[in-house]
Length: 282
Image (cartoon, rainbow, N blue to C red; front, top):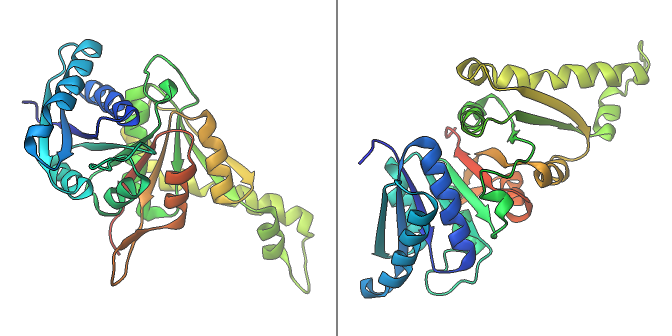
């Protein structure tokens, strides 16, 4: 086996096979082996689905090494455990459920909240999200602060593999900019402060991703200020993107680990695959 592996969960539903297709493409891009996992109540139940999955990959990606395994256990627990030493975990969302329940959104959320490696969440079966021949507008990178260096590096790596551009929507609100310029004794008119504030803020993403840009100097990089809210702008931008990448900032409480609201919003509403990269715990 190669040193790298990509693991994907299937449950027999059509959307889970969309995730399988995406995982196979990622494996081929990375020259990695593909591990297909099917969670069942009894190991004897896994044969037909796993054979269908292996056959599908063999037809579409000849030569790709595929290991298909049935596992008894909770899908989220299994994927987190199997994903500890892989380069990428892949899961689908919005499927038909069933015993494995792999495609219900709660599983992708649970894996995202606990995974030690990047997680790719593929939505539905839209061929635009899984075909390497259909081009979109590149890789979106949602940055929050300089703790998101791992997410930035992953975004540039994906852009390199896809021969795509990295786009960082720098989101601020016109109303917030106005509030920041309020001064009882202004020396500069607010109309002049807003462009200056916008230009200064737009420079921050470039500072955050500088190490990643040095690692992948051939990748084009762009920022664009948008007068909107972070959720609204990012979700709208995903309609034209191949992939959106965001860091997993996690909050712990007595009951469970939770993701930040922006990450949860992308999991629910993004119109392209979502890559969630673990952020360092504070």
